[in-house]
Image 1 (cartoon, rainbow, N blue to C red):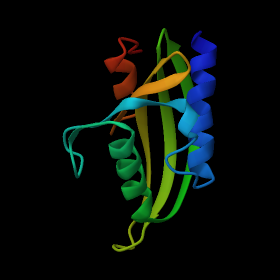
Image 2 (tube, rainbow, N blue to C red):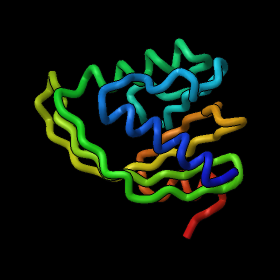
Image 3 (tube, rainbow, N blue to C red):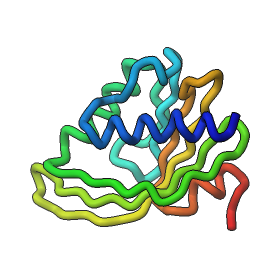
Amino acid sequence: MSQENVEVVRSVYEAWARDDLPGPAHLFDAQIEYVNPPGAVEPGTRHGLAAFTRAVRDVFEGLETWQIELERFIPAGQRVAVVVRYRAHWRVSGVDVEAHESALWTVRDGKVVRYEWFHGPNDALEAAGLSE
């Protein structure tokens, strides 16, 4: 099941790279949770597919350009920790950013039920109990 969960998560990132937001609807549970970390512009948890869709679109709407390199997928049962490097140019501020971050995805029965992102590249691994 772990590799299948990795493929579900990879499919979402591939959709995001094509500006297909929030991604393939059949890959998301209707009650999905979207978790922003403390220190995010809008920290906290959003519930449901409509809230997830708004959150993802709001992030990408602020970006003029965005590129992502998927560096690592680490399966852990129903969860997949992902480490990414991204480059972005913010539309309003004109700021260019290049950084690493991570995310922890929970997948059940082929659908994402929780997406939690982190500022640091190892934070998702730590949250999943996989710290190196």
